[in-house]
Length: 132
Image 1 (cartoon, rainbow, N blue to C red):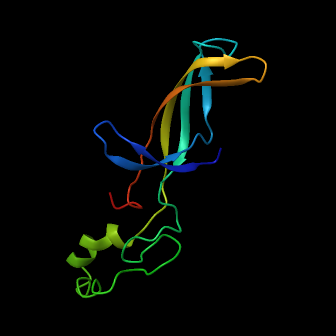
Image 2 (image 1 turned 90 degrees about the vertical axis):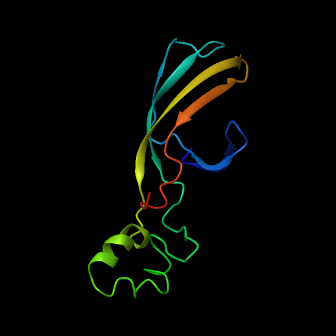
């Protein structure tokens, strides 16, 4: 899996964007065979939910869109204070960060090789393309 964009519901009902990814995962197992009770986990690299082609509500993006939104040049006219305030908003970047995952197998079918279980993944969901 490269990645799978989805929405997850947090305890309390809030829904947030989530980019499921296990790129470059090196998983460590607690047993030699995969079966009920097997646990595994490890570290991986994950891209930002908002990729380079994502445009914010003002049409700014990492690889497409406007460099800055209309009316912002006036705040940057002095070349100093206004520029610093808006740098993070107008300088969009694509970030790749570290994540970790832990998985536990509940059921396994030796005939098909399929197994099911639960996982907990910890990774950044959204950095607003570098401005957060």
